[in-house]
Image (cartoon, rainbow, N blue to C red):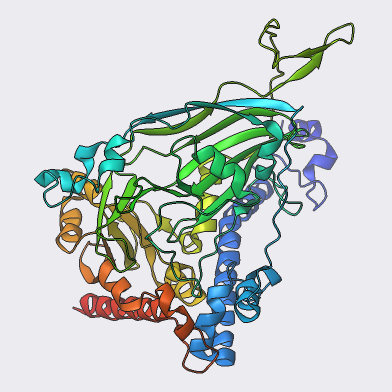
Length: 536
């Protein structure tokens, strides 16, 4: 019987070779092949981990070589210019040095094309004003806050321009550059201009500078909310970043993130700055920007606080400043529908001008868009986040209580995180990547976590060390805080004000970036203190 069964199995299936890999199921050779497949599958994560380890090792090696070549102080200067952290300076990265030495701006302003006969897109603005009782100052009835300080905030109840029309061609500014055409690519629509040479921008201003080039469209969009938008924020993060979320042969779905702020007060009241955590949204447009299918821009409202506010008690830069945070339920622009032609022709070739109110309304039918390549909205948002904050590619978790054997490097804040470029410098990035898990949390979220039995003790330990507005902490996995520093104290120790810029800039051996050196010292002290706790 066994022989009969054996005869029914083709001869070629009883043999195993690298070419056919065939054998009867259940035989020893079949099992071995299954084990080999399992080993290959398991090896994929190990290979990916090996690549990550190699990349981290190369980054650390370049850092060490740079220290030997330039010295610590020289590396601080180099890192402030090396915005993509590849340890090479492109002409664009070198531009601040060139402008500083020559005194001439090398900006090339791209002309924004406006086609009056092209398609028109109508945008509608919606707003729910800031909830005053979400502000910290509301808890004591705004005691000590003058009525004039909050006059602009209290009176801003609705959009400045509820509805406005744009030429579809104006949205060309959101198209990717020629070297960024793959899904997932990110680029700067409006690049940040903040570095150790500029310091931060002044507070005692009422009216924004005239927008140029790509800034014009962003300024026009935000002007629908309020007449005084500042496209370039005083502090980092600054600028606008975009990412291709999806594409096909004819269309892009591009998500974007904008950091901008508003000046709500005007003379004679002192300045009041209103800074949302971010503006984000997406635009679906044709690759030649002749047609816009959808446009959406909004301030995210999914967190308990989403706006930073600062106001002066004087007209000079050195005047006392008050700060607070709050919750804005809605600030949003939405397209009323796809862009449509202003001028079309009928079946007889006669021109119909849709801008003529006496003409009959025309209904348009649009084909459904099918994407051939895409990533999730969350992945696109993460990539833009990393472009703004390079340190966040090193294991940043939105909730600090993540199982880890490494010390946690956390920001605890009432609103925004530390508004400095120190976390973008290569020395700090290398140290964070090597030794820390980075995270951040809002105070209100920690207060809510105190109701969670599993996390209440960790939340309590962090809240005990917190002081307004932002506290930087180094903690153990069990929640023990081993080191911390307040953002106000840190900034007081390291801030470079505009009037000090000339004196600070130098190619002498005495140059150093106090923000970077101070923060590295803070992190290293945290590591040493963590070792003491772990040794107990």
